[in-house]
Length: 516
Figure 1 (spheres, rainbow, N blue to C red):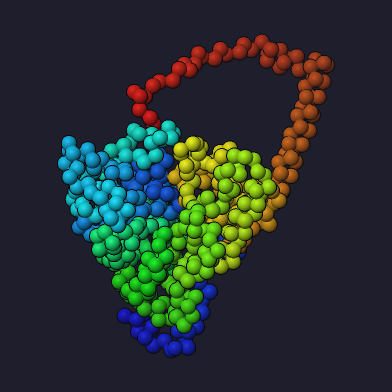
Figure 2 (cartoon, rainbow, N blue to C red):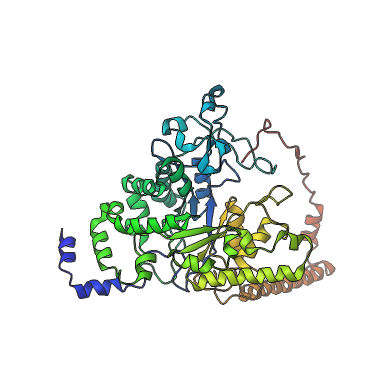
């Protein structure tokens, strides 16, 4: 009550002074040039290389491996709950067709809104029915992913995913020595799927369902809003990932969400009304830039774009009208064409890489983060697109290209460890001006080499070791030649070497099961 009274007595002058704080909401790109860290790692559908995508174990594994975000794709079911599925067709990754000897086969239908495609559409099934189904590994033809976990896990609801992340951030992180000062705690990077199709086919607004679930979930306020979204208390070299990011291929969906978050902000922060009232009242909504992009409780919005859209002449003008915080391009937007690579057209390849760098630089100049998708560890082969492109020898080389040559801000990946390994190893090239991590808040190289003084330090120890070894060698030779050490040396010579035990080098088979 005392805090509330203090707020009510604030003068307009003091409120305006509070509004001039340099940071309101935690930005998608660090606002300070003093933040040193590698690009953010987004666990694409969880840790989906290892486990079936969009399952609670897959999300949990991504968190354990150190992802900055877990990324659920959300679709609605018939009873209104949002659940995690990449496709609106359950047949893509579940056993819906064969469940209980074909119990649901009569539910398959064509959809005019989906170009006449047949499918088991998720919004034709209730949540109770969805819970009967089990999920399999989507990428089954690469030969690199295990099928041992197929049909072991169910489809999670959005509410269950929020509970998982809440438990991880509030209870388990402190037990394993995280977080660091340049990452904060992991967040949710949500994609709302097929908004126009769902409206046309089922008269469902996925955006409104999403807002309602955020407003009604008992833990969403603390986890995704309240103090978690604000960063003005951080030091100059600290960074905290925004707790919630919303992405979509449909710009109009993002525009609608931005408007509704602004109108309904009290629905999401009602557990911290004093903070909400003072911060929003103090926020200067007179300028479009602040109102639409940096409002404390409008989460960062990211527009997903495919390889054809990102190269259109009106792309940047279209992006500007959405007032978003970032762009998620198909990685093909940033790569030479496959034909140029296959035909070794080096001048075309270099030109394409130059244009990719200019594309990222343009986005950064517009204060937009760049988060390309998707890194898959398998090598791309004929008929299997989406893996490591043929211009790279390995997934590590591909990631280094995005990190070190293009300076992207984050990467969507299905193998968390690969992205973290490249980020921690740094980049080859001229030494960075930074001491440990790159400045990810500015353009330029993202990764760095080890500092030169570390090399000098190591070489100094090597030289010292060689010198000491030479002295000891000379002493031993003199000692032996003059007979000063006959007793000691003789005793050493008389010692018998101990026989090493025989080692069993055979490998036990694990009953034919793959071990994660």
